[in-house]
Amino acid sequence: MAILSVSFHATPEKIEDWKVYLQGSVMPWAKNFCGEKRVLLSEIETEVVAEGKNYNLLLFFDNATLRNHFFDEKIALLIKDITATFGNEVMVFPSKLNQI
Image: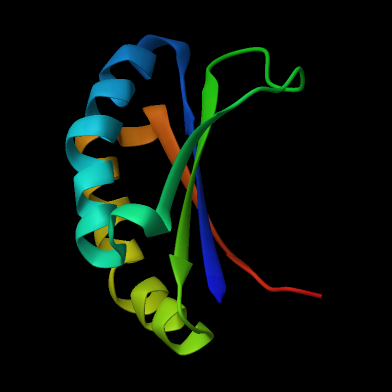
C-alpha cells in the first residue's frame, strides 16, 4: 500500500467557502480516482496554527507506482483549480508517505 497525503491550510476568511469546496469538489474528485473506501478527509486539530484551519486528505493506493502516477498527473491539476478558485487563501501541501 502507498499513501499520498494532501494537507490544506485555509485562511479565516475562506474557511466556510473551503468546507463547501472540499465536500462538493475535492472529495468527489478524490473518490472518483481512488474509490470510496480509499479516501480519508480530516480536519486537523492543532494549537500551533492560530489563524485559519488545516485539513488533510489521505489517498490510499495499491502500490507506489499508482501513487506516483497520480501525484505526477493529477495533483498539479487540483492545485491549479484550488489556486484559481481561492488564490493565496488556501495553500496545498502534497506529500508522499513512505513506510519506514
